[in-house]
Amino acid sequence: MSARGSSWIWQIRRSRSSSANRGRSLPKGTRLMRIDMKRRWLPENVTPFTDKCGRVRYRFRKKGLPNYLFRAEPGTPEFMTEYQAAKQAILPEKVRYERGSFHALIESYYKSKQWARMGDAYQKVRGNALERFRAKHGDKPVSALQARHIDKWMMEISDTPHAANDLRKMLNQLMKHAILLGLRETNPVNATEAIRVDSEGYHCWSEDEIARFDTRWALGTRERLAKELLLYTALRRSDIVRIGRQNRQDNLLILRHSKNKSDTVIPILPPLARALDAIEVQHLTYLVTAFGKPFTAAGFGNWFGERCEMAGLPHCTAHGLRKAMARRLAEAGVSTLEGRAVTGHKSDAMFAHYAKKANDKIMAHRALTIVSDALGLANENGKLSEKGK
Image (cartoon, rainbow, N blue to C red; front, top):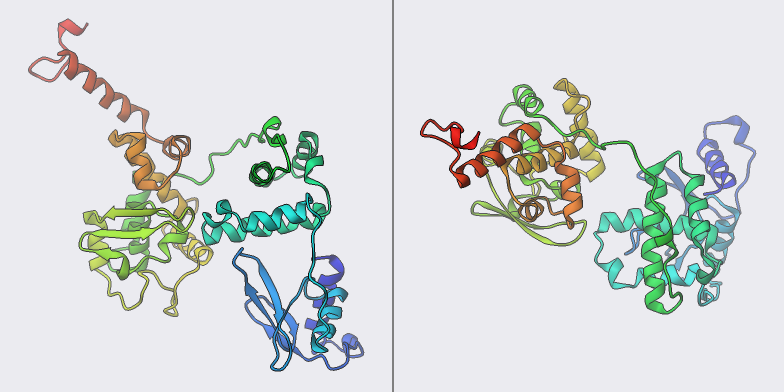
């Protein structure tokens, strides 16, 4: 949203309480209503909604008049022009994007199989990024994009390397789609490099930290159930907040990952079974807010982070428990393929990234024990024999 639009919203918010704004007028016939979840003032008969691409949009609906989807952001003069036209049933012509432009490419991408395979949460994040990109470059021809342009855009936001790398990933997906459509023959993203990030990401919980959390939050608490679900399912927050009694069949949890829409079956290990049995579940989801409502993924992450702080673990997070399970899997000697079956990762590299905190001493001891047994290097006391020296 433009700065001008933001100012307009601020003025309307203040108009009922500030004498400085009492003299300001709005278009005749405009009544305002407040949308609490978005903290925005919207004209009468205008409501927000999330479309199938995960974008927040606004529509006009009034009995006896055609429905209308707004193009401009609330708070801008363009939005109010559209609003007045919708009230008078003066509907604009359907927008037709020029073939070969980023506008047309992105619209086509929203209808692609690649987009449909994304989870709802990922679609929302990626959709917002695509809309920001097309607001700047939508009219430009896809065929004109070169590696130097991508590198320039990445350097402009290099102070936030994750955002720069996400931009590169997004453009890579768009260029692959453009090649499928015959708009390009090559992918310029391949000639660029991701920005190196000197960060290990979320902290991986140690066994000592897991024990300290258990000491603070006993069985029968929401906090303990949340921790056991996170650790012994290795699910993402977006899945943890959806899981409930309907997903449990005998001693298994069966669900579909929200991110990549793949099905998974998770055996319920004893620590998780005890936590599930220790708390009375009265809702469709195992975890609910203090008001008995399901968590959002972000809300759950914030709530769990606060509980970690109360346990003296301010650096620990919900996602860090997913890493802890990957670490445990690596230390137990499971194969990468077996580990991915638990965590839901699609590549060996990503699972390896999560499991890199595995204790080298534990894995080295296990590996050498296997070699020792295979070559007969151990004596009856279990120690390496003279043969192996």
